[in-house]
Length: 249
Image (cartoon, rainbow, N blue to C red; front, side, top):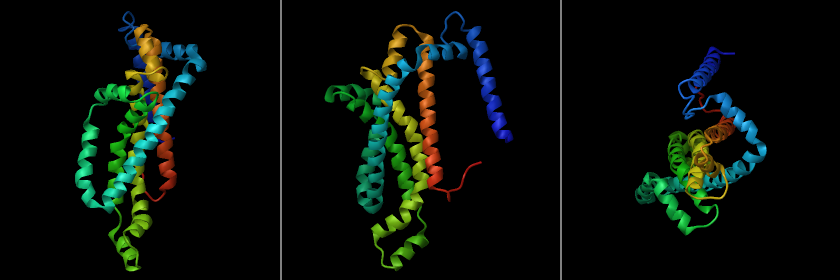
């Protein structure tokens, strides 16, 4: 086992020990920050029957938001490269949409749409811009020599896109998709905060209102774990599909 891995494990273990001590001493009365043992105990007490229906709801919203947000981002990136004139206007719109606070947009979406649609839209918005930039940077990082070679053999712009740009864009694209995975989950949870019947965000609000601090922290930790798993799976897929890309140590 490498020293960096040991250092990571040691640092995490030290963090948990400090958290446990602080939770049992400084915040023992207020319970604002409960110790990890109390949080884990509450998670097991609530059990699978409590968590799974809410996780399933939030994951479904985040999955569709991730699919729609990233699909639109990739399509726009291809359009920007193929038709640079479109980028001058559309990129400004994309930046404006990214800068809009989703807390302000959420209530409007709740009025306009029913069901899980507002959560899916918010989830898509949180991951859209990161993927757009990653895909755009990747498509434009194609090797000029390879592009000229395709053109010399009679290939047009689409042939260059398909044979050179797409492959060149994969590492940068997956860098954006890694960030988009937990961002989509966050967007779905925020959407549930603004209105919903089930999901991790809804249960978190309910536990806060009931002053069940241990459960609130438990839901937060479960949400964090799911986001980390989504990030890891996306990173693994990116590593398998781009074996030629340089790796960080």
